[in-house]
Length: 214
Image (cartoon, rainbow, N blue to C red; front, side, top):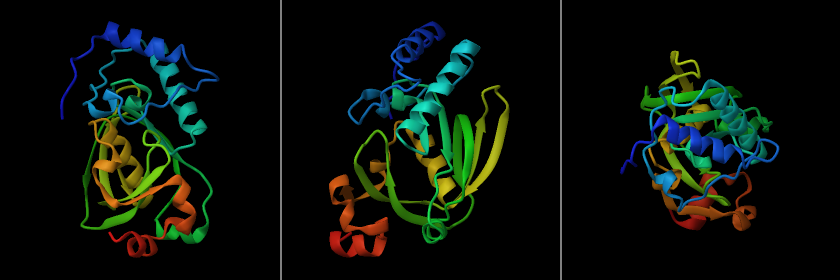
């Protein structure tokens, strides 16, 4: 994966300030596939931003995630090449779907410089979407149980295990920070556009597999 020229603290402060100045009600545009920042290795966050600007950035990322709406947002998705992501999944879901997808509530979480690794042989196969590849979903096979290492906004090093849907969210957002979008890992024949979703209630894998031949 190509890495862009490393931006200085001054460069990043100017870039973040410019992007945040475009916010309306703390919401900024989400860039779409084709924007180079989505295909670059983001820079490790090493306190390049003033504390007040970092706090404003995190507030805007969180508000933008809510407005989308989504369950995660990585800094590159708003044009900022830093290894920072915010996650939260507190949306209501029916019990059957929650059980099938192992979807437990995920409280708001900020992850800086994250990495992850599988901690079991279990795999999970489900449809996945992305705010930067709007109006499409495709099947991605991912580890069902992971351990993630990351830092918080204060630079404290943390480790946490995630399973099921939470693990998928963490992997998806961490991948963004390495220039990887879910479609790179997807079974591309499973791809469904928004206007065709009505054909697959609940995004049932078996039905989609039969009808789309993947």
